[in-house]
Length: 371
Ligand code: NAD
Image (cartoon, rainbow, N blue to C red; front, side, top):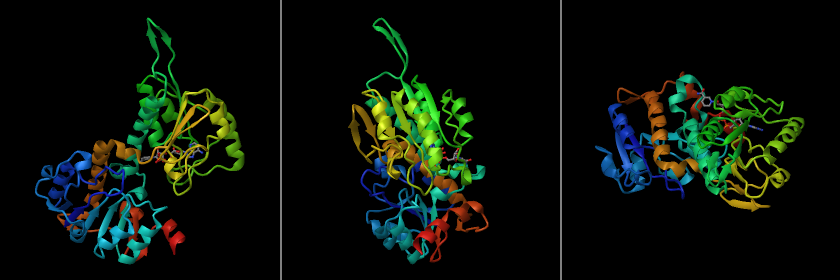
C-alpha cells in the first residue's frame, strides 16, 4: 500500500502528519511511503530521518502516488483535485465546516475519514486526535495567560513581601480545560473550573481545583454538552459573573460540536474584572466564549487583555505532530492488514468516522447540510 504525506501549506500550520518513528511503524505494516520534500522540517524532522521513504519535490506527484493520503488539515478543493479518485484520505476534515472540501471529495470519489468523528470509545482512545491536540492546547493556553499576566501564578514568601497566588478560572472542563487546570495548578495558582456536564465535577476536583456549581447541567449526545436554554444561560451567567470578577486569569474552552461557541463571558463581566487581568479564549476559532474575543488577536478592554489564539496545537508543533502521527498510525492499523488495504465497514470506528465514500457523503450532519 502506498501511503503518502504532503506538506501542510496553510500559513501558520507547522504540524505534520508523519514523524520518523511513525514512518518506521507504517513501513512495518507494509506501507510504502511517499513524502513531499521537507515534509517534517517545520516540526523538527529533516528528510534524512525518514529512512526508506521516497521523496518528491513536486507536490502533485505525492498526491498522485497516494492510495492512502495522510493530512493534518482538511483538504481544500485544490488539494482534492490533485488526488486520484478512490484515494483514502485521513486527517482532520472539519466535518461541520469545510463545505467546499467535502463536496469536492464527494464528487471525486474520495474515501475521507475524519479524525473529528472518531467515536469517543475506549478502543479508539489511541486514535483520538481531538484529545491529543486539545490537551496540548490546554497546556499552552495557561502558559500564554501566565506570560501576558502581570502577576506571579504561585504564592511566594520573599524578603520583599508575600505574593498572593493568582486566581485562575477555567470555563469548560473537557480535555483542554482539564489540561489547563492541571497546568495552572502546577504553576501554583488557585484554580476554579466550570462545565455544564455532570461528569466534570469529579474530574475538576480530582485535579485539586474547586468546581463552580451553577445548578445547570446539560449533558448531550455522545458525552458532549448540549446548548443551554435561555433560562439556563441566565442562571449560569449569574453565578459565573461573581467568579469572573474575582479572577486574575480566565481560560475558556467551552464548545459544542457543530455549533458556534457558547457565549459565556459578556462585556459586562469583562468590565467587572480588575485591570491587568487576562482572558485567553480557546474557543476563538468557533466564534469565542467571550463577547469581546477577536479571532487571532489580543485586544484590550478597560485594561483587561482578551486573547483569542488560533491553531494553538501548531505552536507546539513537535509534540503535536508526534501525537497526531501516532493517532493516525493507530487508525491506519484498521485500514492496512498484512500490507493490504481492507476496510471493515462493520467496524464502528471506521463507519462513524467516514465522511465521504464512493461519491456519497456518509456523515449525516454534512449530508443534510450539503445535499
Ligand atoms: P469539547 O471540545 O466539545 O467541549 C469542551 C468542553 O466545553 C466540554 O467539556 C463541554 O461540556 C464544555 N461546554 C460546552 N458548553 C458549555 C457551557 N455553556 N458552559 C461551560 N462549559 C461548556 O469537548 P471535549 O473536550 O472534546 O470532550 C467532550 C467529552 O468527551 C468529555 O466528556 C470528555 O471527557 C469526553 N472524552 C472521552 C474520551 C474517551 O472516552 N475516549 C476521550 C476524550 C474525551
